[in-house]
Length: 330
Image (cartoon, rainbow, N blue to C red; front, side, top):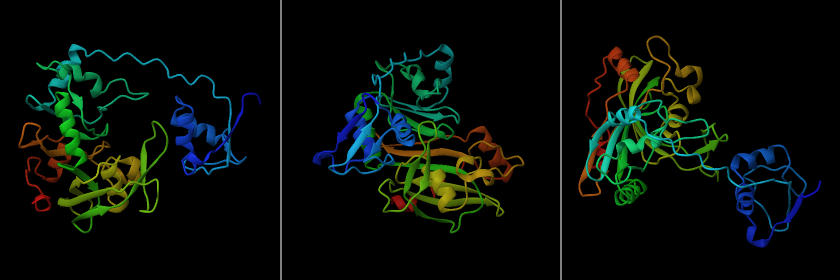
């Protein structure tokens, strides 16, 4: 076939992952396209099929088919914030000062857009400018189906400060969840590495071994706050690391008590039925973070409607301000 390249791997590329080598050599080549080229055998190493995480060795020969035009598609224009979106997003505000805005993100609202996501928080941030010269900046995120406290920086200085706070783990986040089953022991710390699975649009993680080079360490504190018999429990989680779907995966794989409504990690077991809705019962309840202007900011967010319904059903107190992890931060 014409234009097929046979590329000799040089010494400086010895040990480099194949997918990273391909994307470096061919800018504009997406991870999704790389996976498809490898899956269909169009890219081969020394004549054989390989996976994207294969490590190259000096002297190997990589077969690369014609790749066509790799120029990126034209950028989509940023969606304009409508008056309706402006009113909607402003109603979410829990705290506002000269440096920060804290909102209670609803379940179902994506923080950022994707290939199939047109309505998202990032596209509405113009509505949260208020008196500032620029729109606020995202400094962390919550999953689409997770509700609760989300902090935004109102200027670049605050964004840099908050970024350092999250990186140094000087941001303490407490999540509330309804689990199917009661964790045993009732409190403790989960240390289970996680590795990503799937391609774009199919984000998922799985439990991994510490020696797995694709895995990232993940640590989560947990405590049972209350329980409804042996069937369901109100569990508080405090993640130390911030991996994709960390709490959901740890609840299902480490504790064997998936979060109610989390079919992705708990399967059919995650849907107990009855009056418990099939929505994800995971909420970022509280945030304690160093403030750019000094001191600390502590904020809470009320439960979303579907979780509040469950809390009332079982007699749990939705206004409980206790901190089950206070001794860990002392």
